[in-house]
Length: 149
Image (cartoon, rainbow, N blue to C red):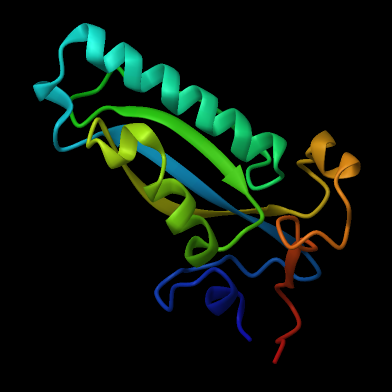
């Protein structure tokens, strides 16, 4: 498998970095959803609190390695949050769709893949989770100088 295939896109251009091993995480980007403007401040706060509780559950359950808010100063739809996971988009999608703020349309989401040199970014929570847990598969790595099948 070529490095571009490992990243999930045939049009991804990767530099020729001989010997560089890449690690990957799935990034969940949250943004103002299609019904964002419909909610009162009180209802939006209620949904945000439910979202926070749900997200804490995803992190403590090992589905997300890290999650947090984003402050976006650009025009809409504004980014509102981000999560990092070892799970695939297909594994994460049903979980994110059940997030109370997403289900209510307060927030929308999309997935991207973040590729980085292996070992340059560590997640301490991974050390506390069982290696055999389906929620925490082994890191996906790709060597740029060696095609994989």
